[in-house]
Length: 174
Image (tube, rainbow, N blue to C red; front, side, top):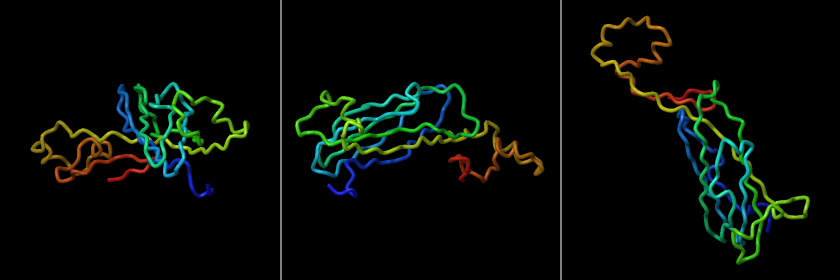
């Protein structure tokens, strides 16, 4: 095996969660085995109380894929800057053909134990939920003054502006 050939490719490398208060939110990623080896994997996180990972370990057969779902527990408040420092680590190691998920044990992923373990880090990115349209009917906005404050403009868009503003890592995109 060459160093260019990874045991598992991971798609995507960023886990995006569209934040909604008091709701569990799930996202997923795929583990892609492009090798002829059976590959065991294990997923770890820096914040295990906040997320559940299913499956958090398993075996990806040669030339196949496995889907992993990450669920964030309900959040009671939005982070003020929409930034997240949580990370996930996917460890992978070659196992013997015929190995099953029950054969996976923590020692397999122990680098100091002499195992050839590959690691890949995944970042968590929070995405703002789309803004709900204003409950004010369009007819009543015709007489509004053009000197509205910035906060008014965020709450009430002009009738011809149908774009949705979404925050990505502190940058607003239209």
